Length: 220
Image: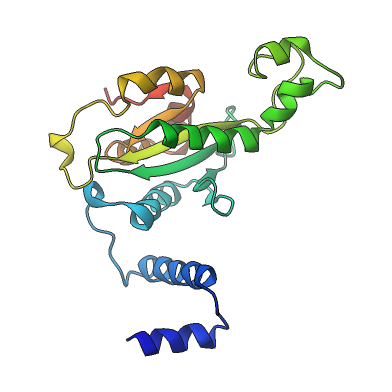
């Protein structure tokens, strides 16, 4: 088995671990897409399996979703063609044996939104040519001149506690100490348990739900 794998990597011209990892992950994705590998039940998914499930759900619902930057955000989703809410969505997919994502997980999503939205420029200049004191005072979130050059909405899809059936889980995803952090950054945090039902509403309505949710999404 190891010799066969070594031969495959050699034939592909791969000689280092990082390239081998990337190659093998892409092969796993292709096998899953072609129906050769199964993902399993949503409540058990983590890592690549959970990412593939999220990507599959968005694509099957008619969204244009593509992988994010290398070793940064997991996905970026484009706005539906006729939507008035044009801000693209940055997706971070997380799983844990804990029922709640860590604050570091939320901060990581904040970093990706910060980068892609051009917030550093907004904080420095207000995007209007010259310093914008109002933008600087409010960290670029409220500027009297213009918005960020490429504003994005942060979306975290979370699965935890892994292996626990959805009906046995606590209703709240966010730890009480982390709610304010998510709300201030206009994040939408949603459980993988609720994601399929939101996406079943269709691209326009689902897009609106994601953008209008500030903090944790709660099914009615």
